Image (cartoon, rainbow over all chains, first blue to last red; front, side, top):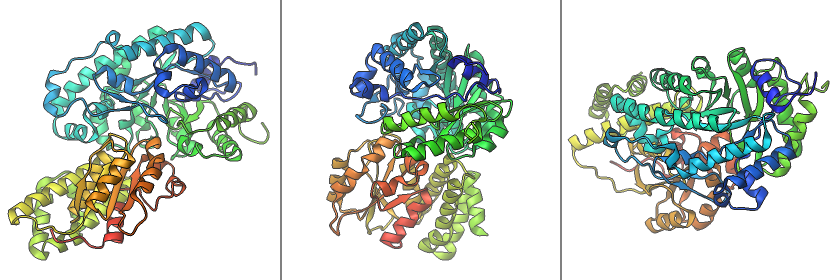
Length: 348
Length: 211
Protein backbone atom coordinates (compact mmCIF):
# COMPACT_ATOMS: atom_id res chain seq x y z
CA UNK A 1 0.00 0.00 0.00
CA UNK A 2 1.38 3.46 -0.87
CA UNK A 3 2.50 5.70 1.97
CA UNK A 4 -0.26 7.98 3.24
CA UNK A 5 -0.14 11.39 4.85
CA UNK A 6 -1.46 11.55 8.43
CA UNK A 7 -4.65 13.15 7.15
CA UNK A 8 -5.24 10.44 4.55
CA UNK A 9 -4.47 7.79 7.16
CA UNK A 10 -6.98 9.14 9.66
CA UNK A 11 -9.71 9.76 7.11
CA UNK A 12 -9.23 6.30 5.59
CA UNK A 13 -9.46 4.69 9.00
CA UNK A 14 -12.53 6.70 9.95
CA UNK A 15 -14.12 5.68 6.64
CA UNK A 16 -13.91 2.12 7.98
CA UNK A 17 -11.11 1.05 5.68
CA UNK A 18 -7.57 -0.11 6.40
CA UNK A 19 -4.93 2.59 5.89
CA UNK A 20 -1.21 2.05 5.25
CA UNK A 21 -0.94 1.61 9.00
CA UNK A 22 -3.13 2.20 12.03
CA UNK A 23 -3.21 5.96 12.75
CA UNK A 24 -2.42 7.13 16.25
CA UNK A 25 -3.15 10.34 18.12
CA UNK A 26 -1.10 11.44 21.11
CA UNK A 27 -3.06 13.97 23.12
CA UNK A 28 0.05 15.71 24.46
CA UNK A 29 -1.67 18.80 25.76
CA UNK A 30 0.47 19.22 28.89
CA UNK A 31 3.77 17.75 27.75
CA UNK A 32 4.41 20.80 25.59
CA UNK A 33 5.24 22.74 28.76
CA UNK A 34 7.95 20.19 29.61
CA UNK A 35 9.18 20.34 26.04
CA UNK A 36 9.80 24.08 26.36
CA UNK A 37 10.87 24.06 30.01
CA UNK A 38 7.90 26.21 31.05
CA UNK A 39 5.29 25.97 33.76
CA UNK A 40 1.86 24.90 32.54
CA UNK A 41 0.50 28.41 33.10
CA UNK A 42 3.36 30.00 31.14
CA UNK A 43 2.97 27.44 28.39
CA UNK A 44 -0.71 28.11 27.79
CA UNK A 45 -0.31 31.88 28.01
CA UNK A 46 1.01 32.17 24.46
CA UNK A 47 -0.12 30.56 21.21
CA UNK A 48 3.47 30.54 19.94
CA UNK A 49 4.54 28.26 22.83
CA UNK A 50 1.85 25.71 22.14
CA UNK A 51 2.44 25.74 18.39
CA UNK A 52 6.19 25.31 18.73
CA UNK A 53 5.84 22.41 21.18
CA UNK A 54 3.09 20.65 19.23
CA UNK A 55 5.12 20.76 16.02
CA UNK A 56 8.29 19.56 17.76
CA UNK A 57 6.54 16.68 19.47
CA UNK A 58 4.78 15.60 16.29
CA UNK A 59 8.10 15.57 14.45
CA UNK A 60 9.66 13.48 17.22
CA UNK A 61 6.90 10.91 17.71
CA UNK A 62 5.30 10.92 14.25
CA UNK A 63 1.70 10.82 15.46
CA UNK A 64 -1.10 11.54 13.05
CA UNK A 65 -2.71 14.71 14.36
CA UNK A 66 -1.81 18.04 15.89
CA UNK A 67 -3.72 19.08 18.97
CA UNK A 68 -5.03 22.60 18.68
CA UNK A 69 -6.51 22.45 22.16
CA UNK A 70 -5.22 24.08 25.30
CA UNK A 71 -7.39 23.19 28.32
CA UNK A 72 -11.06 22.47 28.94
CA UNK A 73 -11.49 25.09 31.65
CA UNK A 74 -10.80 27.80 29.01
CA UNK A 75 -14.42 27.46 27.91
CA UNK A 76 -15.44 27.87 31.52
CA UNK A 77 -13.35 31.03 31.73
CA UNK A 78 -15.39 32.40 28.84
CA UNK A 79 -18.47 32.07 31.06
CA UNK A 80 -16.77 34.02 33.85
CA UNK A 81 -15.43 31.01 35.74
CA UNK A 82 -11.93 30.50 37.05
CA UNK A 83 -9.28 28.08 35.79
CA UNK A 84 -7.05 26.80 38.58
CA UNK A 85 -3.53 26.10 37.40
CA UNK A 86 -1.38 23.48 39.12
CA UNK A 87 2.22 22.48 38.51
CA UNK A 88 1.63 18.92 37.48
CA UNK A 89 -1.77 18.57 35.87
CA UNK A 90 -4.37 20.18 33.64
CA UNK A 91 -5.90 23.49 34.71
CA UNK A 92 -9.11 22.62 36.52
CA UNK A 93 -12.31 24.60 36.72
CA UNK A 94 -12.85 26.56 39.92
CA UNK A 95 -16.02 27.01 41.92
CA UNK A 96 -19.32 26.91 40.01
CA UNK A 97 -20.42 30.24 38.58
CA UNK A 98 -24.10 29.55 39.21
CA UNK A 99 -24.81 29.06 42.92
CA UNK A 100 -28.50 28.27 42.53
CA UNK A 101 -30.98 27.33 39.83
CA UNK A 102 -32.64 30.75 39.83
CA UNK A 103 -29.43 32.15 38.33
CA UNK A 104 -30.34 30.32 35.12
CA UNK A 105 -33.26 32.65 34.53
CA UNK A 106 -30.93 35.43 33.38
CA UNK A 107 -28.33 33.80 31.20
CA UNK A 108 -26.03 35.77 28.95
CA UNK A 109 -24.13 33.81 26.35
CA UNK A 110 -20.48 34.88 26.22
CA UNK A 111 -19.06 36.08 22.93
CA UNK A 112 -16.10 34.10 21.63
CA UNK A 113 -14.28 37.26 20.56
CA UNK A 114 -14.55 38.67 24.10
CA UNK A 115 -12.67 35.78 25.72
CA UNK A 116 -8.85 36.09 25.56
CA UNK A 117 -8.29 32.40 26.42
CA UNK A 118 -10.45 31.25 23.51
CA UNK A 119 -8.76 33.75 21.22
CA UNK A 120 -5.41 32.21 22.18
CA UNK A 121 -6.79 28.79 21.26
CA UNK A 122 -7.95 30.08 17.88
CA UNK A 123 -4.53 31.60 17.28
CA UNK A 124 -2.95 28.22 18.10
CA UNK A 125 -5.09 26.57 15.42
CA UNK A 126 -4.31 29.29 12.85
CA UNK A 127 -0.57 29.03 13.42
CA UNK A 128 -0.61 25.23 13.39
CA UNK A 129 -2.45 25.32 10.09
CA UNK A 130 -0.03 27.83 8.65
CA UNK A 131 3.04 25.82 9.71
CA UNK A 132 1.81 22.28 9.13
CA UNK A 133 -0.28 22.73 5.99
CA UNK A 134 -2.97 20.33 4.87
CA UNK A 135 -1.23 17.00 5.29
CA UNK A 136 -1.80 16.65 9.00
CA UNK A 137 -5.16 17.07 10.70
CA UNK A 138 -5.59 19.60 13.48
CA UNK A 139 -7.95 18.61 16.27
CA UNK A 140 -9.95 21.16 18.22
CA UNK A 141 -12.19 20.53 21.21
CA UNK A 142 -15.64 21.67 22.24
CA UNK A 143 -17.40 20.77 25.47
CA UNK A 144 -20.92 19.58 24.89
CA UNK A 145 -23.70 21.91 26.07
CA UNK A 146 -24.97 18.96 28.09
CA UNK A 147 -21.73 18.38 30.03
CA UNK A 148 -20.54 21.99 30.50
CA UNK A 149 -22.99 22.51 33.41
CA UNK A 150 -20.91 20.16 35.56
CA UNK A 151 -18.52 23.14 35.70
CA UNK A 152 -21.18 25.85 35.62
CA UNK A 153 -23.30 24.46 38.46
CA UNK A 154 -21.25 21.70 40.06
CA UNK A 155 -22.27 18.10 39.47
CA UNK A 156 -24.68 17.83 42.39
CA UNK A 157 -26.68 20.96 41.61
CA UNK A 158 -26.73 19.98 37.94
CA UNK A 159 -28.27 16.62 38.84
CA UNK A 160 -30.88 18.45 40.89
CA UNK A 161 -31.61 20.50 37.76
CA UNK A 162 -31.74 17.48 35.47
CA UNK A 163 -34.08 15.56 37.73
CA UNK A 164 -36.08 18.39 39.20
CA UNK A 165 -36.37 21.43 36.95
CA UNK A 166 -36.64 20.53 33.30
CA UNK A 167 -37.79 24.01 32.28
CA UNK A 168 -34.61 25.66 33.52
CA UNK A 169 -32.57 22.75 32.18
CA UNK A 170 -33.71 23.57 28.64
CA UNK A 171 -33.03 27.26 29.20
CA UNK A 172 -29.44 26.39 30.08
CA UNK A 173 -29.15 24.00 27.15
CA UNK A 174 -30.33 26.67 24.72
CA UNK A 175 -27.69 29.11 25.97
CA UNK A 176 -24.94 26.49 26.03
CA UNK A 177 -25.82 25.35 22.52
CA UNK A 178 -25.45 28.85 21.13
CA UNK A 179 -22.03 29.09 22.79
CA UNK A 180 -20.83 25.60 21.82
CA UNK A 181 -21.87 26.00 18.20
CA UNK A 182 -20.17 29.39 17.88
CA UNK A 183 -17.01 28.07 19.56
CA UNK A 184 -16.90 24.92 17.43
CA UNK A 185 -17.41 26.76 14.17
CA UNK A 186 -14.83 29.41 15.10
CA UNK A 187 -12.25 26.63 15.50
CA UNK A 188 -13.19 25.11 12.15
CA UNK A 189 -12.91 28.50 10.48
CA UNK A 190 -9.50 29.00 12.08
CA UNK A 191 -8.31 25.77 10.46
CA UNK A 192 -9.29 22.85 12.69
CA UNK A 193 -9.92 19.71 10.65
CA UNK A 194 -12.20 18.04 13.17
CA UNK A 195 -13.42 18.54 16.72
CA UNK A 196 -13.54 16.32 19.74
CA UNK A 197 -17.03 16.78 21.20
CA UNK A 198 -16.47 16.16 24.90
CA UNK A 199 -19.57 14.76 26.52
CA UNK A 200 -18.60 12.79 29.64
CA UNK A 201 -22.11 13.01 31.04
CA UNK A 202 -23.40 10.92 28.12
CA UNK A 203 -21.69 7.87 29.59
CA UNK A 204 -23.88 5.17 31.15
CA UNK A 205 -21.44 5.35 34.08
CA UNK A 206 -22.81 8.84 34.73
CA UNK A 207 -26.53 8.95 34.01
CA UNK A 208 -29.19 6.36 33.18
CA UNK A 209 -29.78 5.97 29.47
CA UNK A 210 -33.48 6.81 29.58
CA UNK A 211 -32.55 10.18 31.07
CA UNK A 212 -29.82 10.68 28.44
CA UNK A 213 -32.25 9.81 25.65
CA UNK A 214 -34.66 12.56 26.67
CA UNK A 215 -31.96 15.18 27.40
CA UNK A 216 -28.31 14.94 26.34
CA UNK A 217 -29.04 12.86 23.26
CA UNK A 218 -31.43 15.49 21.90
CA UNK A 219 -28.91 18.20 22.74
CA UNK A 220 -26.14 16.32 20.90
CA UNK A 221 -28.27 15.69 17.79
CA UNK A 222 -29.25 19.33 17.62
CA UNK A 223 -25.79 20.75 18.36
CA UNK A 224 -23.84 18.47 16.03
CA UNK A 225 -26.21 19.39 13.20
CA UNK A 226 -25.09 23.01 13.61
CA UNK A 227 -21.35 22.28 13.70
CA UNK A 228 -19.88 22.62 10.22
CA UNK A 229 -17.27 19.87 10.40
CA UNK A 230 -16.58 16.30 11.51
CA UNK A 231 -16.66 15.41 15.20
CA UNK A 232 -15.42 12.66 17.46
CA UNK A 233 -17.55 12.23 20.56
CA UNK A 234 -15.43 11.57 23.62
CA UNK A 235 -16.85 10.43 26.95
CA UNK A 236 -13.57 11.10 28.79
CA UNK A 237 -12.84 7.61 30.19
CA UNK A 238 -16.50 6.81 30.91
CA UNK A 239 -18.04 3.57 29.70
CA UNK A 240 -19.48 3.69 26.19
CA UNK A 241 -20.97 0.29 25.30
CA UNK A 242 -24.41 1.12 26.66
CA UNK A 243 -24.71 4.34 24.67
CA UNK A 244 -23.14 3.47 21.32
CA UNK A 245 -26.47 2.99 19.55
CA UNK A 246 -27.60 6.46 20.57
CA UNK A 247 -24.26 8.16 19.89
CA UNK A 248 -24.29 6.63 16.41
CA UNK A 249 -27.52 8.53 15.71
CA UNK A 250 -26.21 11.94 16.80
CA UNK A 251 -24.31 12.62 13.58
CA UNK A 252 -20.82 12.20 15.02
CA UNK A 253 -18.18 10.25 13.09
CA UNK A 254 -16.32 8.45 15.86
CA UNK A 255 -16.29 7.75 19.56
CA UNK A 256 -13.48 7.86 22.15
CA UNK A 257 -13.73 4.69 24.21
CA UNK A 258 -12.86 3.60 27.73
CA UNK A 259 -9.92 1.42 28.72
CA UNK A 260 -12.34 -0.55 30.91
CA UNK A 261 -14.14 -1.99 27.88
CA UNK A 262 -13.08 -4.59 25.34
CA UNK A 263 -11.96 -3.22 21.97
CA UNK A 264 -13.20 -6.24 20.03
CA UNK A 265 -16.70 -5.79 21.40
CA UNK A 266 -16.54 -2.02 20.88
CA UNK A 267 -15.40 -2.45 17.28
CA UNK A 268 -18.15 -4.91 16.58
CA UNK A 269 -20.83 -2.66 18.09
CA UNK A 270 -19.57 0.40 16.18
CA UNK A 271 -18.94 -1.39 12.88
CA UNK A 272 -19.71 0.78 9.87
CA UNK A 273 -21.38 3.42 12.04
CA UNK A 274 -18.70 4.96 14.25
CA UNK A 275 -14.92 5.00 14.19
CA UNK A 276 -13.34 3.85 17.45
CA UNK A 277 -10.67 6.02 19.09
CA UNK A 278 -8.78 4.73 22.13
CA UNK A 279 -8.31 3.01 24.47
CA UNK A 280 -4.88 2.91 26.15
CA UNK A 281 -5.13 3.53 29.88
CA UNK A 282 -3.55 6.97 30.35
CA UNK A 283 -3.42 6.67 34.13
CA UNK A 284 -1.67 3.31 34.10
CA UNK A 285 0.69 4.66 31.43
CA UNK A 286 2.35 6.82 34.09
CA UNK A 287 4.06 3.68 35.43
CA UNK A 288 4.34 1.48 32.36
CA UNK A 289 7.69 -0.11 31.56
CA UNK A 290 8.86 -0.33 27.95
CA UNK A 291 7.69 -3.94 27.81
CA UNK A 292 4.27 -3.14 29.24
CA UNK A 293 3.89 -0.26 26.78
CA UNK A 294 4.70 -2.49 23.83
CA UNK A 295 2.34 -5.19 25.06
CA UNK A 296 -0.55 -2.78 25.59
CA UNK A 297 -0.08 -1.14 22.20
CA UNK A 298 0.20 -4.44 20.33
CA UNK A 299 -2.85 -5.83 22.06
CA UNK A 300 -4.86 -2.74 21.12
CA UNK A 301 -3.64 -3.00 17.53
CA UNK A 302 -4.59 -6.68 17.26
CA UNK A 303 -8.05 -6.02 18.67
CA UNK A 304 -8.82 -2.65 17.11
CA UNK A 305 -7.15 -2.59 13.71
CA UNK A 306 -8.91 -5.21 11.56
CA UNK A 307 -11.04 -3.63 8.86
CA UNK A 308 -10.04 -0.07 9.72
CA UNK A 309 -12.39 2.17 11.71
CA UNK A 310 -9.80 2.48 14.47
CA UNK A 311 -7.47 5.22 15.68
CA UNK A 312 -5.12 4.30 18.51
CA UNK A 313 -5.10 6.82 21.33
CA UNK A 314 -5.55 7.03 25.07
CA UNK A 315 -8.87 6.54 26.84
CA UNK A 316 -9.42 10.13 27.95
CA UNK A 317 -8.16 12.49 25.27
CA UNK A 318 -5.30 13.86 27.34
CA UNK A 319 -2.13 12.10 28.46
CA UNK A 320 -1.44 12.79 32.13
CA UNK A 321 1.53 15.00 32.96
CA UNK A 322 3.31 12.11 34.65
CA UNK A 323 3.53 9.90 31.55
CA UNK A 324 7.28 9.73 30.88
CA UNK A 325 8.73 10.69 27.49
CA UNK A 326 10.25 7.19 27.26
CA UNK A 327 6.78 5.62 27.41
CA UNK A 328 5.49 7.99 24.73
CA UNK A 329 8.51 7.18 22.58
CA UNK A 330 8.01 3.43 22.98
CA UNK A 331 4.31 3.79 22.24
CA UNK A 332 5.04 5.66 19.00
CA UNK A 333 7.77 3.24 17.95
CA UNK A 334 5.52 0.26 18.60
CA UNK A 335 2.78 1.68 16.37
CA UNK A 336 5.28 2.39 13.61
CA UNK A 337 6.71 -1.13 13.90
CA UNK A 338 3.53 -3.13 14.39
CA UNK A 339 0.86 -0.83 12.99
CA UNK A 340 1.02 -2.09 9.39
CA UNK A 341 -1.61 -4.65 8.51
CA UNK A 342 -2.11 -7.25 9.87
CA UNK A 343 -1.47 -4.89 12.75
CA UNK A 344 0.01 -5.95 16.06
CA UNK A 345 0.70 -9.58 15.16
CA UNK A 346 4.07 -11.29 14.81
CA UNK A 347 3.42 -11.50 11.07
CA UNK A 348 3.29 -7.73 10.63
CA UNK B 1 -37.83 -8.62 49.98
CA UNK B 2 -38.38 -5.39 51.88
CA UNK B 3 -34.84 -4.27 51.05
CA UNK B 4 -35.53 -4.88 47.37
CA UNK B 5 -38.72 -2.87 47.56
CA UNK B 6 -36.86 -0.05 49.30
CA UNK B 7 -34.06 -0.14 46.75
CA UNK B 8 -36.52 -0.10 43.91
CA UNK B 9 -38.40 2.85 45.42
CA UNK B 10 -35.09 4.74 45.75
CA UNK B 11 -34.08 4.05 42.17
CA UNK B 12 -37.45 5.05 40.79
CA UNK B 13 -37.23 8.18 42.97
CA UNK B 14 -40.57 7.40 44.58
CA UNK B 15 -40.14 9.60 47.64
CA UNK B 16 -43.52 8.73 49.10
CA UNK B 17 -42.89 4.99 48.97
CA UNK B 18 -39.39 5.47 50.38
CA UNK B 19 -40.84 7.44 53.28
CA UNK B 20 -43.58 4.89 53.92
CA UNK B 21 -41.26 1.89 53.87
CA UNK B 22 -38.88 3.66 56.20
CA UNK B 23 -41.67 4.71 58.54
CA UNK B 24 -43.02 1.16 58.75
CA UNK B 25 -39.58 -0.21 59.46
CA UNK B 26 -38.86 2.43 62.12
CA UNK B 27 -42.19 1.73 63.85
CA UNK B 28 -41.58 -2.03 63.79
CA UNK B 29 -37.88 -2.20 64.64
CA UNK B 30 -36.74 1.13 66.02
CA UNK B 31 -34.23 3.56 64.47
CA UNK B 32 -30.99 1.65 64.57
CA UNK B 33 -32.45 -1.66 63.49
CA UNK B 34 -34.37 -0.04 60.64
CA UNK B 35 -31.19 1.56 59.39
CA UNK B 36 -29.32 -1.70 59.85
CA UNK B 37 -31.80 -3.95 58.12
CA UNK B 38 -33.21 -1.64 55.45
CA UNK B 39 -31.11 1.42 54.64
CA UNK B 40 -27.58 0.01 54.84
CA UNK B 41 -28.20 -3.08 52.67
CA UNK B 42 -30.12 -1.04 50.09
CA UNK B 43 -27.41 1.63 49.82
CA UNK B 44 -24.68 -1.00 49.70
CA UNK B 45 -26.49 -2.88 46.93
CA UNK B 46 -26.90 0.33 44.92
CA UNK B 47 -23.20 1.14 45.35
CA UNK B 48 -22.22 -2.35 44.27
CA UNK B 49 -24.45 -2.20 41.20
CA UNK B 50 -22.77 1.04 40.15
CA UNK B 51 -19.37 -0.56 40.68
CA UNK B 52 -20.45 -3.38 38.37
CA UNK B 53 -21.66 -0.96 35.70
CA UNK B 54 -25.37 -1.70 36.14
CA UNK B 55 -26.32 1.71 37.55
CA UNK B 56 -25.23 5.26 36.81
CA UNK B 57 -23.55 7.62 39.27
CA UNK B 58 -26.56 9.94 39.10
CA UNK B 59 -28.76 7.14 40.45
CA UNK B 60 -26.39 6.53 43.37
CA UNK B 61 -26.43 10.23 44.16
CA UNK B 62 -30.20 10.63 43.96
CA UNK B 63 -30.80 7.46 46.02
CA UNK B 64 -28.51 8.74 48.76
CA UNK B 65 -30.17 12.15 48.78
CA UNK B 66 -33.71 10.77 48.88
CA UNK B 67 -32.81 8.33 51.62
CA UNK B 68 -31.10 11.02 53.67
CA UNK B 69 -34.03 13.41 53.25
CA UNK B 70 -36.58 10.75 54.21
CA UNK B 71 -34.60 9.87 57.33
CA UNK B 72 -34.19 13.52 58.27
CA UNK B 73 -37.94 14.05 57.95
CA UNK B 74 -38.78 11.05 60.12
CA UNK B 75 -36.18 11.90 62.73
CA UNK B 76 -37.53 15.44 62.95
CA UNK B 77 -41.03 14.03 63.42
CA UNK B 78 -39.74 11.68 66.04
CA UNK B 79 -37.71 14.13 68.10
CA UNK B 80 -34.29 15.75 67.83
CA UNK B 81 -31.17 13.69 67.08
CA UNK B 82 -29.08 12.60 70.03
CA UNK B 83 -25.85 11.78 68.24
CA UNK B 84 -22.79 11.87 70.49
CA UNK B 85 -20.31 9.51 68.84
CA UNK B 86 -17.28 10.24 66.64
CA UNK B 87 -17.70 12.04 63.37
CA UNK B 88 -16.18 11.09 60.03
CA UNK B 89 -14.34 13.92 58.28
CA UNK B 90 -15.14 14.38 54.58
CA UNK B 91 -13.33 16.47 51.99
CA UNK B 92 -12.63 16.93 48.31
CA UNK B 93 -8.86 17.00 48.12
CA UNK B 94 -7.46 19.76 45.88
CA UNK B 95 -10.31 19.42 43.36
CA UNK B 96 -13.63 21.26 43.28
CA UNK B 97 -16.11 18.61 42.15
CA UNK B 98 -18.20 17.59 45.12
CA UNK B 99 -20.48 14.86 43.82
CA UNK B 100 -18.46 11.97 45.26
CA UNK B 101 -18.29 13.63 48.66
CA UNK B 102 -21.99 14.37 48.67
CA UNK B 103 -22.81 10.77 47.78
CA UNK B 104 -20.60 9.48 50.58
CA UNK B 105 -22.06 12.01 53.03
CA UNK B 106 -25.62 10.98 52.18
CA UNK B 107 -24.85 7.28 52.44
CA UNK B 108 -23.00 7.65 55.74
CA UNK B 109 -25.70 9.83 57.25
CA UNK B 110 -28.43 7.51 56.03
CA UNK B 111 -26.48 4.65 57.61
CA UNK B 112 -26.39 6.34 60.99
CA UNK B 113 -22.93 7.98 60.97
CA UNK B 114 -22.24 11.63 61.71
CA UNK B 115 -20.07 13.54 59.27
CA UNK B 116 -17.99 16.67 59.40
CA UNK B 117 -17.75 18.27 55.96
CA UNK B 118 -14.50 20.15 55.35
CA UNK B 119 -15.51 21.28 51.87
CA UNK B 120 -13.44 21.17 48.70
CA UNK B 121 -10.21 22.41 47.15
CA UNK B 122 -8.16 21.74 50.30
CA UNK B 123 -4.42 21.09 50.24
CA UNK B 124 -2.65 18.47 52.37
CA UNK B 125 -1.48 20.80 55.11
CA UNK B 126 -4.83 22.55 55.61
CA UNK B 127 -6.88 19.37 55.56
CA UNK B 128 -4.54 17.54 57.96
CA UNK B 129 -4.59 20.49 60.35
CA UNK B 130 -8.40 20.57 60.38
CA UNK B 131 -8.80 16.81 60.80
CA UNK B 132 -6.20 16.61 63.59
CA UNK B 133 -7.68 19.59 65.42
CA UNK B 134 -11.13 17.98 65.33
CA UNK B 135 -9.68 14.58 66.29
CA UNK B 136 -11.84 12.79 63.72
CA UNK B 137 -11.06 9.08 63.84
CA UNK B 138 -11.57 8.71 60.11
CA UNK B 139 -11.05 11.04 57.15
CA UNK B 140 -12.70 10.18 53.84
CA UNK B 141 -11.27 12.04 50.89
CA UNK B 142 -12.49 12.25 47.31
CA UNK B 143 -10.33 13.17 44.31
CA UNK B 144 -11.17 13.64 40.66
CA UNK B 145 -7.85 14.39 38.98
CA UNK B 146 -4.77 12.19 38.83
CA UNK B 147 -2.45 14.97 39.95
CA UNK B 148 -4.59 15.45 43.08
CA UNK B 149 -4.41 11.73 43.82
CA UNK B 150 -0.62 11.85 43.51
CA UNK B 151 -0.52 14.49 46.28
CA UNK B 152 -2.39 12.21 48.70
CA UNK B 153 1.00 10.95 49.83
CA UNK B 154 1.57 14.39 51.33
CA UNK B 155 -1.77 14.23 53.13
CA UNK B 156 -0.90 10.78 54.51
CA UNK B 157 2.38 12.19 55.78
CA UNK B 158 0.79 15.32 57.25
CA UNK B 159 -1.75 13.24 59.18
CA UNK B 160 1.12 11.39 60.86
CA UNK B 161 1.25 7.88 62.18
CA UNK B 162 0.48 8.19 65.86
CA UNK B 163 -2.44 6.10 67.11
CA UNK B 164 -4.70 9.15 67.24
CA UNK B 165 -4.20 10.00 63.58
CA UNK B 166 -7.36 9.44 61.56
CA UNK B 167 -7.71 6.47 59.27
CA UNK B 168 -7.46 7.86 55.74
CA UNK B 169 -9.99 6.48 53.24
CA UNK B 170 -9.70 7.67 49.65
CA UNK B 171 -11.82 7.28 46.55
CA UNK B 172 -12.50 8.77 43.13
CA UNK B 173 -12.04 8.29 39.42
CA UNK B 174 -8.24 7.84 39.33
CA UNK B 175 -8.48 4.85 41.69
CA UNK B 176 -11.21 3.22 39.63
CA UNK B 177 -9.30 3.61 36.38
CA UNK B 178 -6.02 2.45 37.86
CA UNK B 179 -6.65 -0.13 40.60
CA UNK B 180 -2.95 -0.29 41.53
CA UNK B 181 -2.71 3.44 42.27
CA UNK B 182 -3.66 3.22 45.97
CA UNK B 183 -0.97 0.64 46.61
CA UNK B 184 1.60 2.71 44.71
CA UNK B 185 0.79 5.70 46.90
CA UNK B 186 0.94 3.65 50.11
CA UNK B 187 -2.72 4.28 50.99
CA UNK B 188 -4.35 1.75 53.27
CA UNK B 189 -8.01 2.13 52.38
CA UNK B 190 -9.25 2.78 48.85
CA UNK B 191 -13.00 2.83 48.25
CA UNK B 192 -14.51 1.83 44.92
CA UNK B 193 -17.99 3.13 45.64
CA UNK B 194 -20.30 4.49 48.32
CA UNK B 195 -20.82 0.92 49.52
CA UNK B 196 -17.17 0.87 50.55
CA UNK B 197 -17.67 4.01 52.64
CA UNK B 198 -20.01 2.02 54.88
CA UNK B 199 -17.66 -0.96 54.80
CA UNK B 200 -14.66 1.05 55.99
CA UNK B 201 -16.67 2.98 58.58
CA UNK B 202 -17.83 -0.29 60.10
CA UNK B 203 -14.45 -1.96 59.83
CA UNK B 204 -12.60 0.81 61.65
CA UNK B 205 -15.26 2.53 63.77
CA UNK B 206 -17.79 -0.19 64.40
CA UNK B 207 -21.56 0.29 64.28
CA UNK B 208 -22.74 3.88 64.35
CA UNK B 209 -23.74 5.70 67.49
CA UNK B 210 -27.47 6.22 68.10
CA UNK B 211 -29.08 8.97 66.07
